[in-house]
Image 1: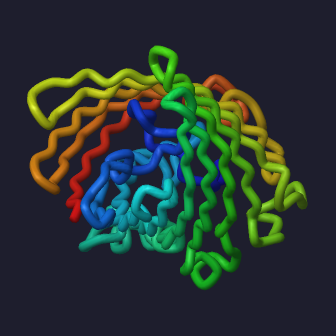
Image 2: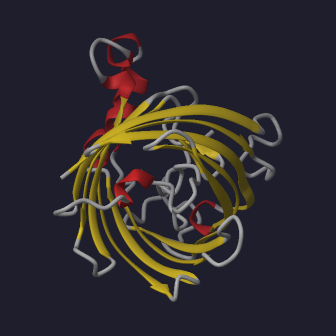
Length: 275
């Protein structure tokens, strides 16, 4: 099956996030607003598919900057398959290793959030996903632009969130856009979550989300992912550690190999430092 590559909305929901599944702990405040960290997923699940292929672990180093109390933030995130490190897949399977190296990425984000009377939070976010080795290794470029609008109702239990994302691919090749359509890719996600405070500085976040993906570029559409997650976070001073367990059900046949791959499990771990 052709790898489905588009965006990283795949970190599972943890309470307090607004739509995107990226390192949620990066939103935690710090005196000068800078947080550095790294996350590891043992399988990169994204919108109903395994981004690097089933069972391939991925590292995400990242740098986050919150611009004071303006609601504006900037972020860089890298993306590297664990199989390409050391003497792994690159030697045992050169073809797959070449593909994994091609999907290494440097991704950039600018986002803005505004909360109205502690009742609702409105979010606007833009990402550029840059796969800087894809064209050299594969002959085509998987890079794309992504914009997201989100609304979280803070006044209701479970902080329900709805988000809408639009994707635009930069390459017109038949591999990236077999339908000939670079844009018109729509993803809608509904999510709820609850945070349970444990000992001082630690919490357990429980999340549930469902997404519908209309991927015109690849002629695929349907309910791509229903995800349940549990995430444990502990911190002291500027240091934060987290680990999560995630389960996904993939209803749509366009994303589950015609019913043969409906269920996914994966774990994620991360650490960060704010200063």
